[in-house]
Length: 166
Image (cartoon, rainbow, N blue to C red; front, side, top):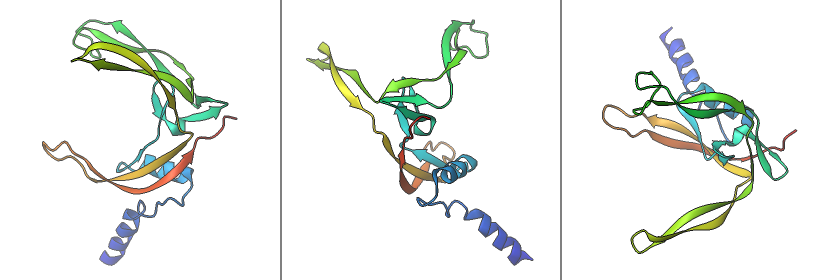
C-alpha cells in the first residue's frame, strides 16, 4: 500500500517535468497558471504600459490588447483611508479600456554632460519584436527568512509569435 501511495505521489510531482517546448501554447499557459512554482519570462510588450505578449494581438502595425485594462485616477481620499498612501492619495479605477500602441515608436532619453549639466533629450526609435523568445522558469528555492532571493531555473525556451487580430 505504501508503494502505491509513493508511486501516485511521484507521478503527480513529475507533471511539471513533462512540460516541454513541444507542447502547445495553450497547454503551457494552463500548466503555468495552475502551478505556483512556474512562471514566464520575456513576454513583455509595451502598449502605453507593459503587458504580457499573451494579452495582445497584431492589427496592422499596432499592438491591440485582447482584454480591457483598468484606467486609474489619483484621488485625494485622506490619510485615514485604508488604500491611501502617506500623503492621503489613492489610485482609483475609473474605467476600463482596450489599449493599442504602434509596433515602432519614438522614445526619448536624456543625455547629460558635465555632472548632469547641459542635458538634452535625444530621440531614438524603438522597434518591438513581433516574435518573443519566452522562457518557462521553475522556482528551485524560495526566499527563506531574511534571504530575499528566489532561485529559478529555466526549464525551456520557446518562440511565441504574436497573432493577428481577428
